[in-house]
Length: 115
Length: 110
Image 1: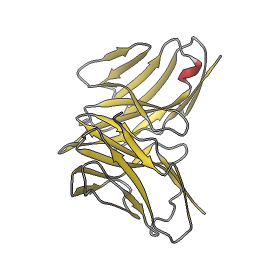
Image 2 (image 1 turned 30 degrees about the vertical axis):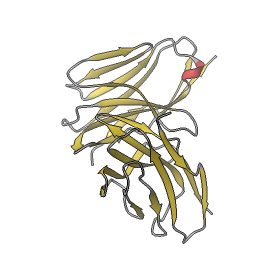
Image 3 (image 1 turned 180 degrees about the vertical axis):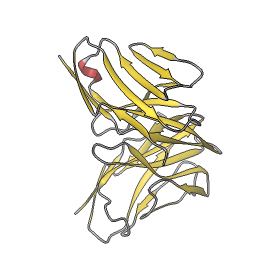
């Protein structure tokens, strides 16, 4: 079964610090790697995504770093804020079936940013 | 406002009963999905649909059924055959790469 392994399971960071979440995948056919943010009791929301033809993508305080040879990618949250406290999921996909794209999700990281 | 709505927000079911979770989208997306989320785990795909009157099994389809009679609607039925149905259920839709999620339905079996 295709897997995406995510670590750490939980992360506590001081306000203003850098939060780093890592993911590793097995399937070399994956070509789309999104990160989702989920607040308690809510549905996930797309945060940022990357394709393997670039090694880094930055949007505001959020950066994805991608290492194709190591089959790893990570999310960096700069200047972490208490409002960033949420669960973060990485995902990967390479499977298009018509209009549908199947995502394989990591197990999630619960981030707590202390004030 | 465009988006995805799921109802109800909370649902309680007795063992042996079938229940149907509603999912509606007004984003004009062709593809729709159902996921199950358990504590400490990622999202697992139950079913997905590319187009009206077509749907495919995901990784954990046993004990679930779906229909897609309208582009906007993709209801999920949790049948009595699902052995452990208590979970948070998420519906999503997509066009191209990005999947948009609804607010979820929390199902509890009593």
